[in-house]
Image 1 (cartoon, rainbow, N blue to C red):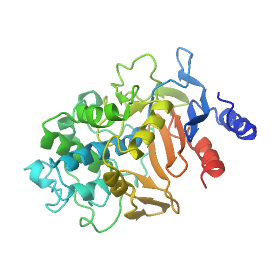
Image 2: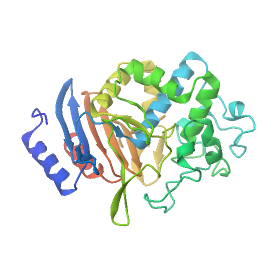
Image 3: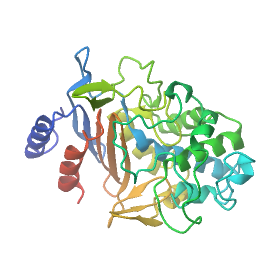
Length: 340
């Protein structure tokens, strides 16, 4: 653990991590200095392998920012536009998506399309939510049968409603428009220009040695999440990364290394407010309720993630855990001390 941070904060991080049996990583960077880099718990519970600051963790919907950037890079080069309709690339696929739904609507969660993972229902996080065998979901086109059959919830542009399926549709549109597989688009247009050396879509049934396993509590036992999520993440989530790479990501983003500064400004400009959530939303990124602090967040079976970045003073706060609830106590502590 770095000792650059305030000793009281370090002690409180250790205390909260211990009280909550936290397994994951915590990192704080400010103005080019790493003030805190710590790892807790086990990356592999069965084999007793400890977590390290270099462990790769799944960040669930934290990936949506990377999907949005891959799409925006295609917008910048003219392959797509914010006004491109989903229908123009879907053809007869997903016929319940309205004809006027655009790339911009999907990026902003205002498309109104029905969602295959509706976060407003009462399905427990431990449920096997996927309706097809998860091992078959290893490409974007395979998600068509998962996305199909959900009626429009409201007219496009009417309001904000967080929609996982909308970001898989974005991945599908980006893939069809560019002729390049979505995972390669993210690698080539986001990870590589940002200098991310440990960030990638990893198969859950073939994780490399530094990747931490995600866990779900079932019948009083901790089981891995391998049967709960698609075997390979896609547009709505599932990339793996490290605390160091998340810091690199934010630095590169606001330096204009991924897309232009003008595009970044568009993406982090608040466009909507979320029901029952004080935060605002741009295009692929959450924004603090009152400040220009940008956030990525992820929550799923076996993964919890929050990263905040304040470009004004170069502050980045990142917490990633290996269960759905692991990250939140530490994220609240750090947000209260360093951001709010």
